[in-house]
Image (cartoon, rainbow over the protein chains, first blue to last red):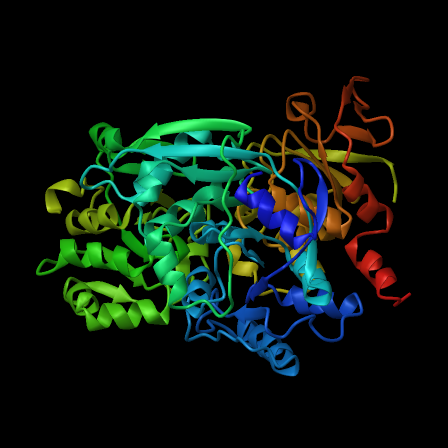
Length: 419
Length: 167
């Protein structure tokens, strides 16, 4: 069996599972973000009274952190009341950050577990050898009532990433290159196991970037076998004992794809689709893309490593006139660390705007909305029409290094000469 | 649940993501009627106000990709849609639709065989979709057992109420 199948089998009380089988699995941790007050409504509509386990579920107020309007503030109030009434052990209010950063920091993510959240990017937690998947509000309400959810055991495909990335090629470039080949629906209903020497040597933050964007290929979940970096991270934080699962030798994947990372260059997903991926050099050879905004943030590109590389490029310099660069640290912990290391001061001196930790403009809610006709380069995960505000705006997805170098010049720029 | 339904169609393209189905700026709304008034606004502002009651949305591949927002099927239902026919669906959208009683049916290539304003009949038992104006009929995939179990109960909410002895 594959490690994911072992996780599903163990949590469903079975010896083994087979592809296509429907199982009902226990959920180790369930997270509700602040877009989904409907979860609370569905919970009561279905006759729910108390959550199944006050230690295993939590709200994260990240999409409206802090609240931009009366409606979202009222939603928060109702969710906060629900959390209080159920005496939830964990509660992440507007001071915390994006759920996929906040949960591992709080130690509720660990290898071998199943985490379900009302957020599609829950695939992120494959970085820790966990099975993470997203669901809607009412599915989440059924979890809060029963502590379990039904799953179809997915086909598992292997994406093998081999080699060392050249200078200037970051995990974001790697996953964009993969996405361009596998396409936005290439892994629908399937699980992706990222393997290969590149993954084995990748740090926690880099692993999270890659697993995060697995959902942009339609994947149900993502997986990476934990390495020492992951084990060290989890050891310092996990709130429960855990067991790492291993895939049996000789496991046969439904499909396998191999990528040689050493041959890659910085990549861009061009408007208006995540699968519209091209090498950066090709894009700028064809046209001069002038920018209005740069954005570094989100559960994909707002970690300390991302902000550090931007600060490295921009320290002692200034972004181009009449542009703006929005920096949104993925969590309060990330922001604190970036302040301590001086990155925030360097970025502010370079003309950046620092916003509160959270999802912010990644999904067009607040803190960096685009006007019609504007062009933004961003370290986030989606460039759908209207994603960051006006549907007449254009978004290019890139690594944080590419975002920083591009804002320096006010046009899309290869970051490599600036590293 | 109805296993045969007839309605007028609208046709949209490939990779219609949940931001196009229901833009992020309206995510704080909770009233289904209000939610429905913004349905598919990312494709065109006119769709929700002119959508035929009991209508069917026809799409290309990967309908509902992107975020897990349940607002997407809520908006489609509140707008008056009863089914979505597409080449393929994103997984979370598919689950959300089944849970709420919106039919997500895989019908490969259907968007090339039908035009906006035509009338389709979806017959789940027969596994067919027929176009009234052309008289042509096309095969569609069956929904899985688990999906049918939920749909036949009227959605996940009645199913759970029954399980917890609330009705």
